[in-house]
Length: 117
Length: 115
Image 1 (cartoon, rainbow over the protein chains, first blue to last red):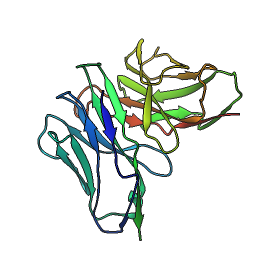
Image 2: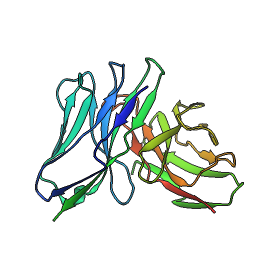
Image 3: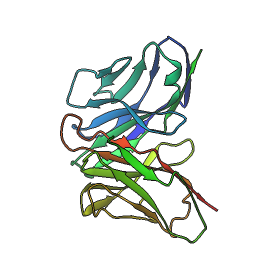
């Protein structure tokens, strides 16, 4: 069965500094997607970044980038030049179609990030 | 504006009552999902639908029911059989085609409280 683990329940970072959130997952599939979502206090889930497993190049979206290590099943999120608006809960998510068990989408328990002024 | 709407934002229910949560999208997405979020936890999948008139159980479907009669709408009914329904419910939709297939876009959520 697939699992997604976020080992850091809470983290804090000083404004303008860089922080890395970790995510590991377990699957026997070869084709899948990985996502990072942000949930601010409004509770609206917002897509931060996505990665297709077949792509070796790490995804980047402005200040957000990932370190995708497929063999190690690791998918960490790096936030550069942290801003106060980055304060939120961050969820790592896994999705696959087909294969054993068919469609599956799993979210980690989340990491609460505080950006300090 | 394209997006996903959920209503109501807050819902109160007496024990033993069924309630229906609304989810509508105008993004022309084929797939729709319902998740439950409990305090301090991630999202758990209740039901999903990848095409009109078809839906599948997720990981925690017991006590819930859905319908998908229209592409735009995916209502969730929380029945009296659901033992602990108080939670935050999120609806999402995703396209099946590029440029961002399978990326889920979320509604603002409904907070259900059982009195």
